[in-house]
Amino acid sequence: MHRILAISGSLRAGSCNTRLLHALGPLAPEGMSIDVFDGLGDVPLFNEDLDTDPAPPPVARLREAVSAADGLVIATPEYNHSLPGVLKNAIDWLSRPHGRGALSGKGVAVMVATLGRATGYRGLSDTVRLVGSLGNVVVPDPEVVIASAPSALEGSPDGSVRLVDETAAGLVRVQLEVLADVLAAQAHQSLRQAVERNRAAIERARFFPYVARALADGATPEAVTERLLSAGQTRETAARWLAEARAADAA
Image 1 (cartoon, rainbow, N blue to C red):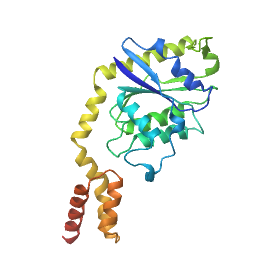
Image 2 (cartoon, helix red, strand yellow):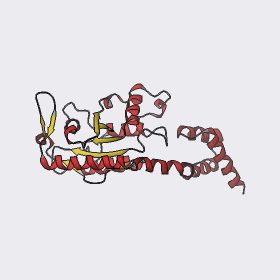
Image 3 (tube, rainbow, N blue to C red):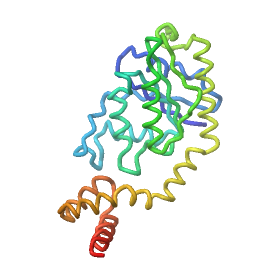
Image 4 (cartoon, rainbow, N blue to C red):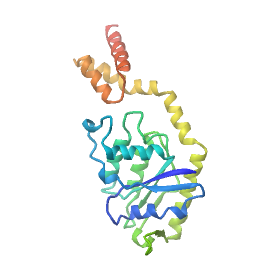
């Protein structure tokens, strides 16, 4: 059984994207369960001062739900030619702690429900790029942008929602099947393992130039260490990089 967490990029009560997520059950392949996360509106704006251990309860709930899932489905509107701030905020929280965030090594499908016929693809592209950059395997094709979404989604008296646009339903069905194949092949886990095997080299390439520049500009070792700690590094790693930077400067 593939456990999928569905996240909507809209907080609106009647959101087409939230309704789309509730319509996915009948379109999912056998062996895939889909649960819709409903707490995104409680997540505070990302603030490094709030990124504590333990995390704020709404953040902890979001991280735990994503960590427990095998994969994600994100349905999001497009706001001002990109993804909504509420979704970006959630992704920022899920990317922390640096290098060990909950949103990494997952299989992910992204789709858009939109009111018109000329929007959606830029929000889709930005979301795919951002989620992929965190070390997830994002389904690249088919791209699912459901135009005129209110007429494509039909509600029932029992509260259920059905995607009645046959073309859109067919694309969603294929996208979910591809996501299931990604998870079955463990492609998402293979990517994560490959990154982790090279984590030390990746982190050094990312942060060591900062250490060398900061010391050259007169920053104290203590200040550099605190900044590295806030970025998820250990004191031992910070001390090693500081020593290497001093040795390189002395040479």
